[in-house]
Length: 253
Image 1 (cartoon, one colour):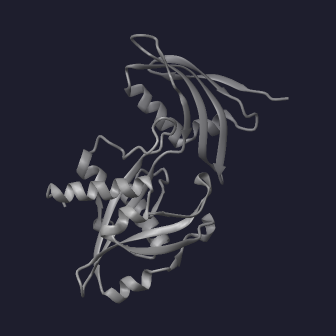
Image 2: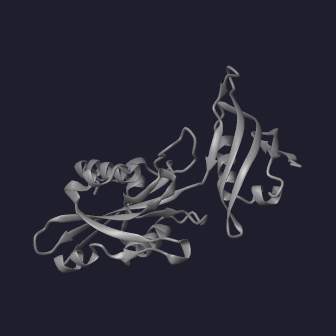
């Protein structure tokens, strides 16, 4: 027998019914989820929409913390009362880093792709730039540096990471949204540029990396920067490359 938990939460001053369908998930667990709370705060800033109710459908735990949360929100426009789609896969923010390595000897520029299994897109070998989920601290650049070390072995100081998202859009934008029709994920895009001996760049080719504690198994693929767009059809990779080229053209890099 399935039991549900029902309570109310405040959104824009309104008592909004909140139903938790999975009986093994407590109200405390849901309300402790940073990404869910962030969504609520953002909805409070959006005065053109009204949330009538929320139904929590599933929760995936990462250890003791909420990882992914799926819910359905009954949302209407304030002026017309028109129902708008409100099925949300709530996973929060991520960072991604465009790496550009310049050869000391030739001046040729290369980029780094991580090749790993991505089950959601049914791919054993998926190519993308280094990336990772935010840890809830809100410290974008720190997480970017950590992910870069874990996925490539490159140790960088935070001041060497350039925030492409901030350069392009200022401080009002969290990141780029790859799938806003169904997911709250935003990706903060960074740039790391370094000049290295060609031998050091060559050493990275086919290097095995990844965080074993997170079941990561990654192989690096070093590609000419000019060919990056042809080597990966990944959304964040292409977005980072596009921002880099546009910011470079506008003399902001």
